[in-house]
Amino acid sequence: MALEQEDNPLSQFMYSLKAPETRRQWPQRLKRFFDFLKIEGDLDNQAKYFVNKANQDPQWAQESFIRYISFQNERVNAGEISASTVPNYFKPAKLFCEMNDLVFNWNKIRRGLPVARQAANDRAPTVEEIQKLTDYPDRRIKPIVCTMISSGIRLGAWDYLRWKHVIPLIDDDGQVIAAKLIVYAGEPEEYYSFITPTAYRLLKEWMEFRHSYGEGISKESWLMRDIWQTTNVGYKSKFGLATCPRKLKGSGIKRLLERALWEQGLRRPLENGSRRHEWKAAHGFRKFYKSRTEQSMKPINVEITMGHNIGVSASYYRPLEREVMQDYLKAVNDLTIDGDTQMLQKHFADLEEKSRDSEYIFKAKLQESNTEIQTLKSQMTSVLEVLKLAKSKDGRLAKDRTTLDSKRRIAFSYVDDDDQIVDIKIPIDSVEVEN
Image 1 (cartoon, rainbow, N blue to C red):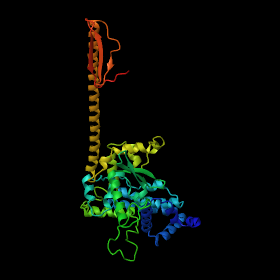
Image 2: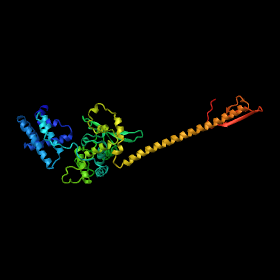
Image 3: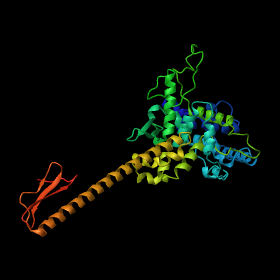
Image 4: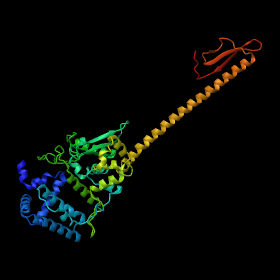
């Protein structure tokens, strides 16, 4: 098998492609290059022909790249494609050459690439546009959109997401405050992000709905699947049945989103001269996430939850997952666009009301304690005054006459000027007297 890969130029190229979307698009773009050179046959035969001729005549291969880039530049001038698209046609062919040990003067070739805007001139969707999109009558659209805008995941992440990769985070009151999302699980690019309580609830309801139709839901179940038949379920084919789920790939989710955008009136034909819509179907959600979270989260934590490379900071900045989660909770309200915003606000209002009730009870108990202390002080003052009066009259107190009677009164006696014993009783409702 290894020998076959070494002898097959196309296999060498495919070996270097990791992401599913890249494996889908780049072979098609490589074929565009070979078709431009008028090399006949399927992609496998074209690849072999190019490698053989490039080894025999490197100058021909290098000039072929220059002619191909010049052709793409003409398309840019004609308004067919944007300048930023040209490198997308060049990169697959360059990688193919590198994987097959074909070395050219790449610096010379790249000088023909047009200078393009580094970032696309598109925006993030508004809350109103997202709400309108989620009104599309497909049960999957809400959990898909709410998951993407509240986690910032890429479209390709859906190819790996299973139910076990969604982990609810519960507070002391048993409330789901967010859910952890493990993105690209098992891959070198694996990282974690979070989703809002609303997104988690929608995903959970979606899984429960599937279970109600007979699908055996487990931790290994794909998060998104095909829509199944609800009529003629006795049909012999197993495909299209709830009990035989098929994963909905990222490419299928993209088609679903685009269909929803057009049918909800959020996409219209481009005007003359325009090459792209105001916001992208899936990548726009990622921009929404970044724009919203950076208003309340640390920017570096935003990058971590988006799976971005934070460069040299990764060697020094190592926050605990709990710390990133606490930071994410600050942005939950900004990332919640479903009608459950009111539910979330009610939850916070309840917490605030409980806090006010606790404060009221504490103040009431404090006031009660202060009152008791003042009463005690007043009673002791009265006792001291009587004792002072008794001593001023005779200077003698009757021995062993100070007691605490059954009615909780201090009882004591003193001898007056006529040598008569005078009994004094003072009520002390809350005073404890030690023996």
